[in-house]
Image 1: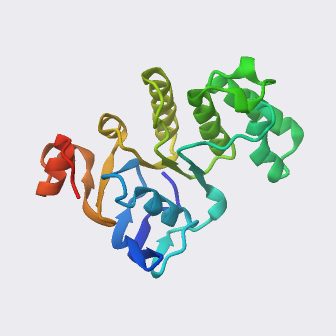
Image 2: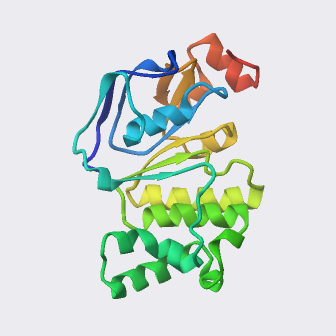
Length: 234
């Protein structure tokens, strides 16, 4: 459990080029578990993640953390950006920015390379990794500085089943160890496997929010029923 939560969004609104792309959103996330954000393309999932992480400008409203320390947040993007350095150097980079002693960096890098199965690739160029390997490296690079909260935007989009399973196993592991996960996904199977609670966004607003099991089994609105059925919802 992280002391950063609860996280409270009050009347949050984001506008771009005169158009409201998110909000108003009122939402409170508790301290435990994995929150999965689902909804049609263009519903505002990425924008909501960016608002929570503090990298999206909001027009109206506010975001309040119980204990707001930006250094305790980390964000993994859908398409990870690899530095033109070795795999080990990519992993070490966040700790180098924090001026962590070299012996501690080396221990952490060794630990995470083993954990994500890339120890044999430590000296290779990160830009040459497969999509799944890059995403695992991006997640490990975010986790190496021990954040309280990890935001993930479609971390297994366009990956095959094997890579997706590996990423989900890693996320299960870190969530069970106490890292708070907030993640957007288009994969409803993945949402069911990982979620403790679910936010369903539609047209930039929270249409339903609740614990995963009852929300998936007995949705309250026709729109969520249709979305879970695979229909086009707008």
